[in-house]
Image (cartoon, rainbow over all chains, first blue to last red; front, side):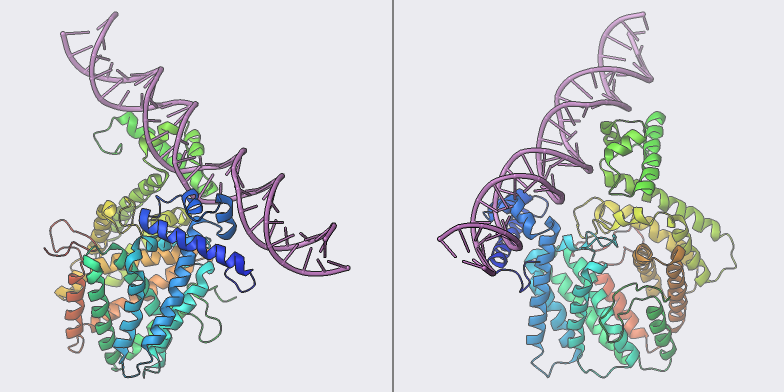
Length: 240
Length: 240
DNA sequence: TGTATAATTTGAACATGTTCAATACACCCA
DNA sequence: TGGGTGTATTGAACATGTTCAAATTATACA
């Protein structure tokens, strides 16, 4: 809204100032404990002004998450300039860099899941309003997959599967009270090791028919984004 | 609180009257649109009285979900008296009966996912406060598995895996706008067909080592309930 | 420069979930 | 029957997210 190039530089500045102080307050006091009035006055703005730049309190957190995503894309791209990495390391870079970014902000993360059960809500992680985010996130994973030699059906499934896996990992991360969330790190490594082994096995002829059925099932269910065009995510309309 | 046998019969009655009228209002007007004041007066009670029986608005929905769970257990038990059903049919009964119960109430379902990202919240689907619910739900799936011949590691994983799958299906169900959510029904059938085929293949020697790693990983991550004793769910404390 | 139009800022007002102290009621027992 | 104890009920008061009409400030253009 005000982070687009069309907005005045001043407005962009105000917006980002409100955003950054809000994040500081959130980190200090927690999400619930920080009131919109506090956020506004901490930024030296009025309540109404805060609402001029952000349609809701949750929207502030969503804006934070947009930034996280951009930073994630940057970091993964940076990690992938090293071309000698194998698939596991590339995926590891994708997962771990996300966790690195979010490390101190697990509280902020909780808000992301709040509307996951509400299809109509603009901030639902699975809804229309966040489609762009999912696409971007999947394209990061696609980048990590790179030109790895993989069967076509696996290739079709993998980005969405990795995105779903990554959401699950984030949930685990939120609930992980081990020191510095080392447990989540180990889980990521374990899952990826397993995944890579599975991808090697998946070429076996005994597994071929299952693979086919799986792809068909996911496609029929609309759980895969469309092949090339702007990816549509999660439950697509039934065919007319 | 007041549905325990220790509460006076009158209190239990009042509580269940408030609950049932609240559900009617929720169904008519939606969750957000129904205010606590409306719910109370629709039940002929005062606002304070509603709060005497339910600690929060969400708690009313949670109470509904408790009832759903009890009904689910009943229906699955009833379906399983027919002993000639194979695994797929038994699991199908478990999944479909759940959907049958929830068919008209997808709006109510959304609330269940609202706190999934908040470990401390009593109503988090993944948190401490709902552990009992998860245990019950898993034991329903365990019942459906029955004495099916299965490797031990698979047996250890399956209830939790089915619970997780079922949560995913519920999400799909909420987002499914096909007529009468037929799409979700097809997804269930497809997934179960695939699962049963996979369970047959899993005995192959090529897959054995992967199976072992998977079990170890899930155990290390605390994602499996403990073997027999009162099941602890999702991320358990790290070992001392 | 002066004015019109748009962008931004403001805080009062509102809606609603929740709390709580005060009150009424019911039941038990001497 | 009367009184006492715990149960149940009440609605006013509160906190906070959100809305909005009005006021202010910036920008564009003649």
